[in-house]
Image (cartoon, rainbow, N blue to C red; front, side):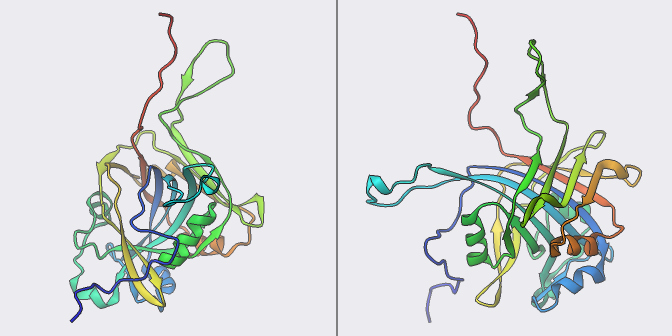
Length: 291
């Protein structure tokens, strides 16, 4: 008997695990009729997680940096011109679990799931679409995890500890209190698949961490899972029914199938929660002074 665990392959040139140098992750969550999610999980080996008879669908925008070495004994002339890469991507997800583990699933409310996670770690994300702007991330996602990635561009206005300012002679920093992002059509960056704006004013942030987050995919035609660990607390904001304006989701003129799938999955379903995460700054540069 072999004492080597049977795991999916890691094709060249990729290595695992992958360490994030920084991460911004903002997401929006919807409860939708169960039948909508079931239609997208046929043939995957997954079943939709149930939260009071409904499925949980989300999209989350990620902005992250990774640092890379050029290699061992690589000639200087072949070193990379930059030791880091920045990636932006978005996942359209359905929370699901493996059908063959159905007997091990325990009921959980969506609030508890978003705050503390499913402790069995069977509930995980099934990716429906993953638009991304970085070739290496697209290749890694497809090769390692079977992600349905496609290349496109984004427009973003994210909250940050770095302020903005108006063009005035007196320095008056201002902070962005709302955040949003737009996914562009891959053939026309002037046309949107969708735009989302979020305003958390008046909502209470609840810190928590559901890591490790289970992510499902395929490799060599088989269902696989992997873990994603976010190493700090994340703020979750639950949206009361009387505050329907917290999330403004608008579809663009793009005819990309992602737009049609979003309209199908999210039709007439209000957002129930949003999540915001910014990794901690590594260093801080203060303003100048006169000694």
